[in-house]
Amino acid sequence: MSILTEHDKGVVQKQFRDLLKHAPRVTKKTERDMIRKAFNFANEAHENQKRKSGEPYILHPIAVARIVAEEMGLGTISICAALLHDVVEDTEYSLENIENQFGEKIASIIDGLTKIAEVFDQESSLQAENFRKMLLTLSDDVRVILIKLADRLHNMRTLSSMPPNKRMKVAGETIYLYAPLAHRLGLYAIKTELEDLSLKYRHPKIYNEIEKKIKLNEKRRLTEINRFSLPIIEKLDRVGLSYEINGRPKSIYAIWNKMQTKKVSFEEVYDLLAIRIVFEPSKDLPEKTQCWNIYSLITDIYIPKPDRLRDWVSKPKINGYEALHVTVMGPGGKWVEVQIRTTRMDEIAERGYAAHWKYKSRDTHESELDLWIKRIREMLEDPNSNALEFIDEFKLNLFAAEIMVFTPKGHIKSLPKNATALDFAYEIHSEIGNQAIGAKVNHKLVPLSHVLKSGDQVEIITSEKQKPQRDWLQYITTAKAKSSITKSLKAETKNRIDIGKKRLEEKLKELSVRPSSRVFRKLLPAYEVLNKDE
Ligand code: MN
Image 1: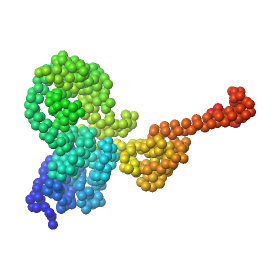
Image 2 (image 1 turned 30 degrees about the vertical axis):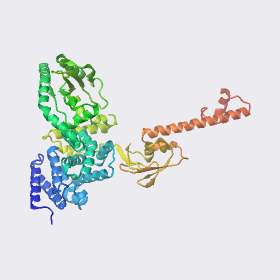
Image 3 (image 1 turned 180 degrees about the vertical axis):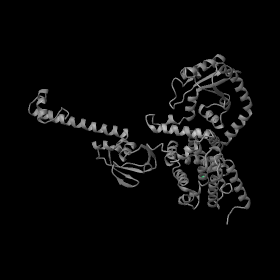
Image 4 (image 1 turned 90 degrees about the horizontal axis):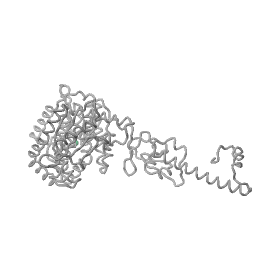
């Protein structure tokens, strides 16, 4: 006996039909049939559940599937997985049921989503960076992350029906974890919406105030941008440059964030217009020169503010950002920031991720990551591209070169692949490493040479009598462990030499022999050693 009324059922059917209408990638009848099957399965599984708002629960998976289809442009597999995403976690159905009905691929996506939910519930204090890594490690399919983000986006859109104390937790996680994740994946519209929604619940007063002020000022802003840009456009056209110029409005969150970090008023942030010029550089001149040429062109029209010049063309920011920023006095005596970038620089600025990554280009997985993000962006931006096949095949093994392990207290440490328990010991502290005698991995006793796997929980057993051993060098991979061990071994050798030297001197003294090089020339061959240290 269902708890849903006839009216509820009607709403559910209508929402499902709308989903199919807004799934541009779903074109074949077989695909529609598959989605309908997933819907029927989920609908039955969630039959007796309601959301906090009192709506039938199934409306949530339908909405998530719609974000996945419509806003992310994903296809049948993702839509099915989105429809089924809460089944294993929240109903009696198991992963095996899903696999039997929908095959291995969909089941593995659901498995990833369920695992993330579990980790997240336990480890609510996870650091943002670790969270992102964890997410990427746990999910060997990009779609897991995308569906997780869609899930979070819908939860944020419907957050008002949650109890207030829960709202703050969800909104907090969103701003610290999910928005940066969306940012790194290049999902900028979703990132901005997550940020704004999070602010709305965390600081409703501020949010409403800024929103109101933006509406009041929008028209004036556009007029100002046009007035400012027209002379520049004229000049750029005259030199025959291929470029785009725009003055995108800042989001509510971006404005607030700037007010906070720069400690300034709304007006001071909002009034500072920012224009971006992205141009296609010609092959004849260095990009840097061309940026400065545009700078010169703009400052022919408007007077620059010298202390606001930012030259990240000659020397990029640490995160890889390149651009020339100049602030000039616009018409009406207002400062206007102009960002000058080539299309290549713009792409770097948009992708942003790679440069943050701790390994530099010598490691291949950074370029894999780059490639992946680029491809995902291309696919998401171009609804007609055929990159979907790519996403179907692509396995997210970006972090195959890295493993995540836990301390007994649940903190995450990242180590290179093939790292051993001894590497882990040195990762915690060099003294722990130096005194390590064994380890417990997932509560089982193992030798220090034991190779760790992602997800292992590792505890190091130490003894004050222990000292670094020479053969340890054979089973460590981290530079940290290596340098600690070599250092201790050297110190120990030096210590032994000192003792030996002292003893020899005493003995020679007893025999009234002065330690001269002549004496040593006789001693060394007699004891079959090659040098004084030995
Ligand atoms: Mn959900």
